[in-house]
Image 1 (cartoon, rainbow, N blue to C red):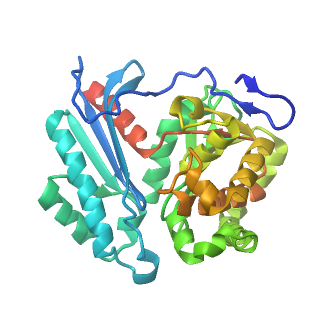
Image 2 (cartoon, rainbow, N blue to C red; image 1 turned 30 degrees about the horizontal axis):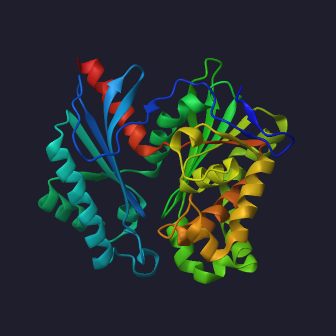
Length: 355
C-alpha cells in the first residue's frame, strides 16, 4: 500500500512501489548516446503537441528526450467545424521542432497520432497531408477506442492490487475518454467498455469563457458534463459496482496531475512525486476547492498551473467534479502517463517479438 502523507480523512498517498513502465529522463533537445535502439511516440492533441523518445529498459523504457508545447489546435473547432489557419500554423511549428529533434537522434521506429481535433475537423485530413509534405512526419488519426487502449496500456501497472474493476478517464482538450476495465486475479486489465465524450478543457473553455471562473458558471459546466455521462452509467451500472466495493478510479490528464500537485503542496510540478499518487476523495475535493478559490490571477501565479494553462484548469476540474459526483469512489489514482507511453510500450514489445 502507498505511504500516507498527513493524517485523517484528507490524506494524500504517495506513489506506490510499483514497477513503473516509465523512467524520467533527459528533457534536453541535445542527443545522448544510448546502448540500444530508440523509439519515438508523438501525440498531436486538441490542445498539446507532445513527443517522447525512449530506449528499452527492463520491462519499460528510459526517456531520452521529451517535447511538449501547447498549440491549441482545436481552437474554434466547435464553432466552425474546421481547424483555423492560426491553429494549424502553431501546430505545424511544433511538429517541425519534433522533426528536427528526430533528425538529430536516429530512432528505430516513430509512431505519430492525432486525436479528437483531427477526427472532427472537416479539414483535418488535408492538414495532416500538409504536415507530411513539410515535415516528413506521417500522422495517423486514431479512434477513441484506441485512445482508451493506449491509456490503459501505460497505466496498467498502477492498477495492480487495487480491486476487481477500474474506471480510467482521460480529460483531454476536445474530448474525455472513459474506459471501464475488469482486473483479473493476476492483476491484468481487460477493457470491457469505453466511450468518448465530445467535451474537453478547450471546448468547455470556449463555450463558457469567463463564466467558468464564477460559481454559477462552474456548476453549469459540471451539470453539462454529468448529463453526458449518464448513458455510460446506464450501460455499465458503475455506481452500483462502487457501492459493492472493489472499484478504483484512475485519472490521466493535466487536470488530475494538477489536483495532485495542489494536494501535495508542491512548490513546483514534479512528475516523480505525482505519477502514482493516490488521492482520497476528501483530498481531491479539497484540492479542487483550493483551485476554484484562487481566481484567474491566483491560477496564473500557481506553480502547478501558470498563464499558459489558466483558461483550461477549471473546465478540467468541472469534468472531474462531474465524474466523481456520479461515481463517488473512495480514492483516485493519479497517472502522469498516457498515449505516448502506451505507444512506446507497444513498439518496444513488437520489436522484441520480431527480433
